[in-house]
Length: 308
Image (cartoon, rainbow, N blue to C red; front, side):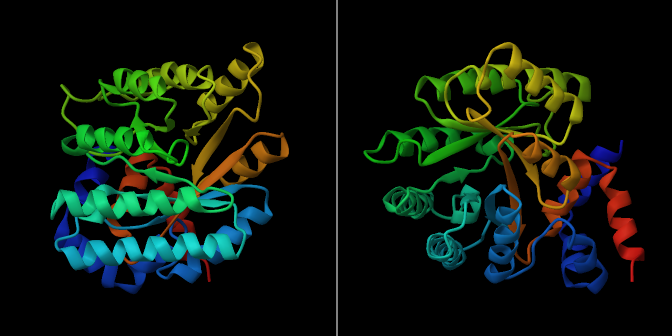
């Protein structure tokens, strides 16, 4: 029930406008969002690197309404890649196609993302662009474009996809991505989807996650297992031990501000760990989806608001 509530709240434009302008809303977001400016997220990335973890940087935003907004979003990512290189950060970037203008001009969006992947591939050492997954209306177009980008000369291993385990189609999509050696970030999913498209029960989503996770771990391609679920993490570690899968063959991924104790514990035990760090002014939909994924995060926020 709480999951459905927070997903509905994430889609409310009126509440979003009020929250993003209010001081209390900004305080609520501070645990999960690094700040509003590039310097905020770059500083956060450096601190996470100092703790032995990699970073994926996301400029929050989706469904831009005009070409200028899309080009500005792409320009900001170019700036981030430059800063990652100059500061020698262990970090890559994550973006949404609708933030690059997919709904405005598909060819423009493709050109903007292609330019970012080409830049990442030309860096020394090469960097990486994660094309994030959005709601089901965008799934096929997103995956088609990732396949296309990955096939371009010099782009292999510099662009990857996200698969959501609550989607019925996830296993087929993974098989196609693995056939081309494309890196995958596996998560559970946080958009509102109908029963004919996605599993509705947590137990079904979790079971599919574990099934897909094992496919990825055995694939010999470097993937990211994005989860804060301790039971799933224990299963991943046990599976790696049983199958003699190297700890260097994959990484765990978690969100900024969630289960820092677990993140640091994994690093201490010798597992690879990457933290997804978002920033920007458009934090409201992101925050609501994080609460939908894990309603216990409400308690974290409440504690933060009570601190002086």
